[in-house]
Amino acid sequence: MGGTRRQQIATWLAERAYTLDELVRACGVSKAIVAEDIRHIARSVHPPRRLRIDPSRCRQCGFTFTKRERITDPSRCPRCRNEWISPQAFHIT
Ligand SMILES: [Zn+2]
Image (tube, rainbow, N blue to C red):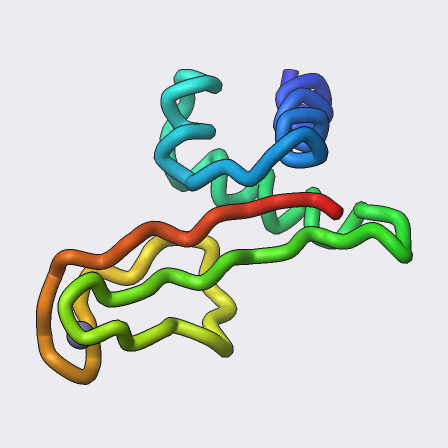
């Protein structure tokens, strides 16, 4: 049940920050499905609480992916072309 899984994800995100891959492993569904769940949760969190996203960061040059709208992680640094990127983390606070 999608609703139940979303509630479970929202509960986890209220406890600590999770990366997309961690949630995919915990839920056993595809990355696309979890990304859609996160988008849905982001819209349904009641203020003043909200879904916060710790941005991805290039582990080579330190470039930070702020202003990023996408839930899925970037694959390559636009500044140095490195592909060693730390994942975004999602947290409800
Ligand atoms: Zn870089």
